[in-house]
Structure formats: structure tokens, C-alpha cells
Length: 396
Picture 1 (cartoon, rainbow, N blue to C red):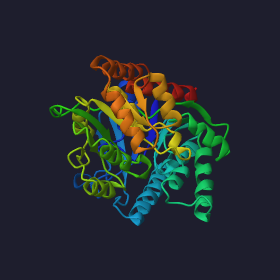
Picture 2: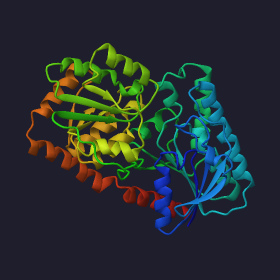
Picture 3: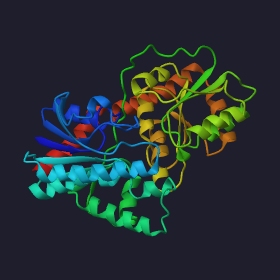
Picture 4: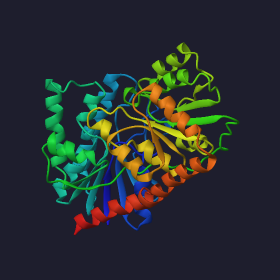
């Protein structure tokens, strides 16, 4: 097949879509990606990419369009979204390249896949939309938009139009189906649940050796939904267990508040913030961790989804401490490799003590259950095969 992939983010930006495209090429398909100039996480267009609009990466033909760089201001983020939306649609209208199918990965915002609908409609080819982030629900849960206001109504109608413009939709979490049916009133597009594959990158540095003690690692976004203030509270509760330490890797809107809280509670020696790290370096912390920590505020439809970091965690074969509900809890119940806690520092501290008290064999068994579940369900090859199957069916 000749496949056009539309996604605003692509290598060197750290997103799974790059691995999917590369794997589709390895499966024997011709793949072209429509994306933007790399800027996510950098605060600027990477200098070496300012005038690079076409290149070949791992056998994938990459077309890049201009956009405003995403910085730390709300206006720059809006400019970033709208510039890719406009310029990618312009490319889709003008290109004379022919493709059999279109595949888009709908990260935030949903308008970033509009070009996929434009190309599919113009050339009368099917479009498979892979929804891994719900709109406009994501804007509500992050408190950026009031779901009783005019802006929400506009975003809801816009999102509906884009989702409805696709031929078929695969969703990244089972609860997404309910959102589509109840909120978006779309019941005739969703054909499957296909999680976003985790970016499990080979470690480029020596694994971190923590030394004695019990070391828990969190890696991911530091925002209000992740409630990382609770692990600071748990560290306070566990003051009589200085051997229990948290290691936090990541960035996000709550990072400064999180670092400030660590200092205020005087737990710098037990809650260690390592800053943001690329996956090739963060994986060094997972290898010798005693447990991995995942949390997601159980609020709205977003709070019921499967965090992408959870899929990544399972690949490393470690016990997981889960402060999650919805689809994430269902998943961990199936794997059998987790200990759960409610959204309470006291409960989290107790869950940690329960895991800490287990024998080495019991802890290793929990980790093995997670790794086995990952190998059976979530490898990059399996997920890409699932996507390929849907694309082949659409082409027919």
C-alpha cells in the first residue's frame, strides 16, 4: 500500500507515530508522512530544520510544513495549532501524490488531523483516524475551557465535524467509545480499540545504580491530572522509612509547584526530581527500579483512559503502584502485576509499605506478569499489525 500518515508531531519529536511509520515500511508499505517542523519540547524550531521541508527517515518520506513554534505561553500554543492546521490542509489540497489510504494519529489538538480529511475527500480514498486524545474533553479536564461556555460549544461542533469526516476510527482506550456515543453522538465510526504504542527506547547510557533502599520511579507529565503532590505527601507519611525513595522524571504545567512542595516539606532526600530526560536516558532509571508509579485523576472521560506511560512501564517488567481507575485499573487487573491505592497520600504510603514487605520472589513475580502481558498485547509490531489490518480492510 501507499500510505499517507498525517500527524503534527514526528521525529526528532519524541512520539510513537515515528515508530509506527518506520514499522509499516518494514512491513513492505510505501509511507509518506505529513507533519510540521520539529519544535515540541524545544520552545523553538530546531535550527537544523528551519529550511528542511522534505527528507527520508528510516525509509519514510517526510513532508514538513511551516508552523509557529510552541512555547510556554497560551497564545503561542494556539498559534502553533492553527498554523499547522492551515498549512497542512494547504499541502493536502495541492499535492499531486497518490495514496491508497490515509492514516492519522489524533493527538492534541484534533484539528491537527484535518488535512487527512481534506486529502481523503479530494482523492476519494479512505481515512483511518486513530484517536488517542479526546477533544474537546481534554480542554475541559485541564481547566482551559469551561464546558458550559460558548468556546466549548464551538470546539464540540468542530471536533464532531473532524471525527465524522473520517471513514473509520480506532480509539486508544475502551472508555473513548462511551465518550463518542454519549458526548459526540457518533456511533457509526469506531471499529476497534488500539492503544498507542509505548516508546520503549534502548538505553543509551549505563543503567542507574540506586544502591540500597527501595526505589520507586515515575516518568511522565507533571500536571494537575497526575497529582504528584500526593507522592510528596506519601514521603512525609513514610518519614520513618528513609530507605524508600521516589525518583521523578518529566516536565509539565505543575513542575514548579511540585519542586517547591518538595522543598517546603523537606523531603528532597526522598523525592528526587531529575528533570526532563529523553526516553533513551530515562529508561536507565527503570532497569534497577524496585517499582514504577502511575497516577491519573479519576475525573471525566480522560481520567478513565490508559496513560501511555503505563504501557511503557509494563515493558520493563516491574511491579506497578497504581493510583488509577477506569480502563487503566481494568488493564492492571488483567495483568495482575500491580498494587493499587486511592487518591490519598496515606493510602499510597500504605500501598508502598505493602509492596516493600513482599519477598523478592513475590516482587519479581508481579513484574513478570506485567512484562508477559505487554509481550502478548502491546509490542510495537503487534499494534502496527492491528493498524495495518484496518488499513488493508479499508483499501478493499
